[in-house]
View 1 (cartoon, rainbow, N blue to C red):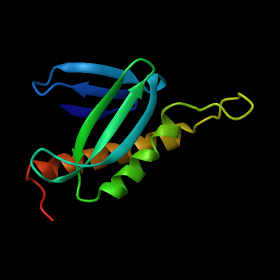
View 2 (cartoon, rainbow, N blue to C red):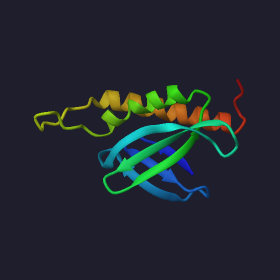
View 3 (cartoon, rainbow, N blue to C red):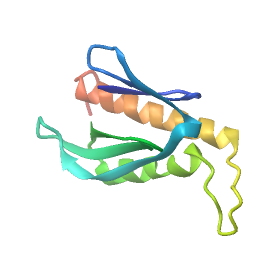
View 4 (spheres, rainbow, N blue to C red):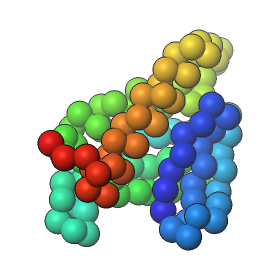
Amino acid sequence: MSLTFKTSGIEINKPNGAQAAVYGWSGVASVSGVEQTEAPDGRSAIVMEIASSDKGHHFIVPTQEPESLISQIATLTPLCQAKKGKKGTARKVSPLMTGIAIVLVAAIVAILLLISAGVLHF
């Protein structure tokens, strides 16, 4: 499966390339790095969760720096959807910050995929 982060939202694609789901940013409740784990091939990885109001998706994302990736993913949750404050008023999220977060996560995911495919070596 693959994830594509776009300015309009998140696309989830099946291994054959067919689209499995599309979530606009307004439909994404949270994006989080849940925990450190091990990928099926033995590499260090994290469990990433993308939750909408009706469903959650979990992905195993290979990474050499699990703690760093979990903290970077944590920056997405407040940008996905404005959260209600203590008085019930929504906080506004800057479109610029949302765009920066999307580009950052897309770059991280692309680098991780290139590393896992053996294209990049460190």
